[in-house]
Amino acid sequence: MNQVGRYQILEEIGRGAMGVVYKALDPAIGRTVAIKTIHLSELSNPEERQRVRDRLLREAQSAGLLSHPNIVTIYDVLEKEDYAYILMEYVNGSSLEKMMRRRTLPGSAELLHFFRQVADALDYAHRKGIIHRDIKPANIIISESGPDTERMAKIADFGVAKFVSHEMTHAGTMIGTPNYMSPEQIQGSAVDGRSDQFSLAVVIYEVLTGEKPFTAESLPALFYLISKNEAKPVHEVNSTLSETVGKVLQRALAKDPAQRFASCGDFIGTLSIALGDCAEWVSSSRAAGGASAAALDATSADIASQSAGTQVATSVSESGATLRRSAPPGAGAAGAAGLRNGPGAPLPETTYERPAITRRRHDPSEEPEEERGKSSFAKRLGLILAMCFAIAAAIVFIVKWNSGPAVPVQVLDTSSGPVTPPPSQAGDTSEQRHSKAKQEPVARRTQTQMALRVPQTIGPQTKKAGSSGEVADVELLSDPPGAKLLIDGRSDESCTTPCTMSLPSGRHTLTAELNGYSISRRIFSVPDNDSLLISLNKSMGVLLVTSAPSGCAVVVDGRESGRTPQTLHLSAGTHRV
Image (cartoon, rainbow, N blue to C red; front, side):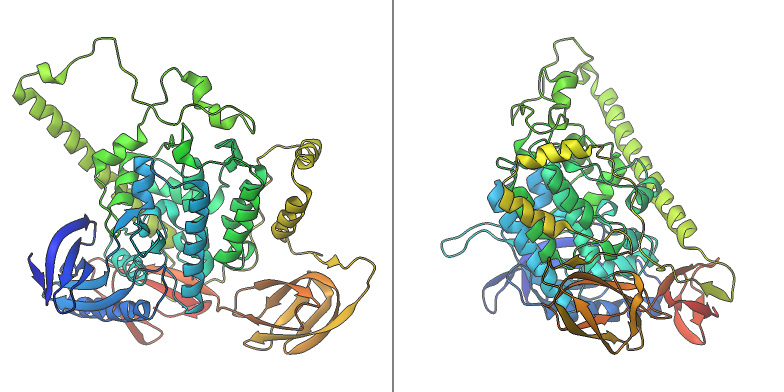
């Protein structure tokens, strides 16, 4: 390919499951751009293909409204024959994924600066009503500095990620990286900005420790871990981090979105305070053992690397080499545990070469050329079969996960309340925590602990204002109105919106309930807030409709809703399909 419209193709810079990413030149204004191709010919049904085109245009147009220095700008969308082309800002730099693979992550202060930029960009998009849905290291690009510019983080694939995750799943292809998905994404529930916050927390966990918080040898097992299991505390993986850092990440990784931070900015702000208490914390690139020792199978790594990220294309062999990196010479079991022995443990050397093997092994170069060819072919065939098996397992899992009863279908409201978190895995006694707390600077510790106070269950959460006993009137509103409000989980302190309540000074938890809507919670302070509006989201369920053969029209409550296979997001209640 030499040209797309008026744009001259310069080189290929990435390749993924959807298509190819090119570096190109706009000769009209002399601007370098990136062009992402999306192959539409896999959708054989003309009506389905047209629907996909229309949706792609809508998503790209909405993403094109985003104007933020830390978001890769979308310039235009073109269509030619069986391809759609998305023209976007070209960023000269490397992704976090590539930096982690090459062990070239920035220093601690610069990393925090980039995390703040990413959080600021996500919050900006969320205020515009746009959710990314595919935050991962490959979609966070660190630009190179220039004479008049400084290095900065940029988020790629806004709009495109949402389109792909929705449409390509219908075609039976899993797009996106499962390790970074939120529980609500996996379960097919409605998502908001807190889903991106969960994915960002997974990325930061991996950057800080060199390990993904959730790994498994199959996609069904991985989905179960993300939905049910807690991540290992970061201070048990990287001894330069504190238990407080782990608590911040655990909150951002909460299974229930209501238990996460109110925004990505709040998350990074609290994380910055916690990291500030760790005098000499380092990321995974500066700690031996930072390379992931997780038991990810090659197929999962391949699925991750093959999702179409800007300027990133990782081969199976590269992923395999990274995942199988050995420990430093002479480390043995003690060296492998170096980052797990708690604060104060000595860190091994930061760079190392693969240990030389002195015992004579079979040398493939001594084989005849034909034998080497057979061996290489066998390895490639094994990888291909492994990929096919994992994709098939994922499809079966998704169908089993989402399949519903025969018509008429009862879609249940699954958002009846928060998920009660399991008991802490840390195992610290109160005496140990008290002893450790004495060593922290008092001012910082107080600030951090205040930021970390989160209601884990519905119950009294008010922090009274000492002896002041101040009481203030707070106007309480909901969208839509008519919601029942509870203050601090107390039934004796409730009202129906719109209403006004007299509340004592301090922090309070507001719970809003309305039939047909998900329960919503907000934390607020009196007298800082004299008026509060809480928005409610309709309760939704997910239903996967399939048929044999595929391509049958799907009609829901008398309305056409595409053709099978089709994923439907329906409000709670009874529907006729």
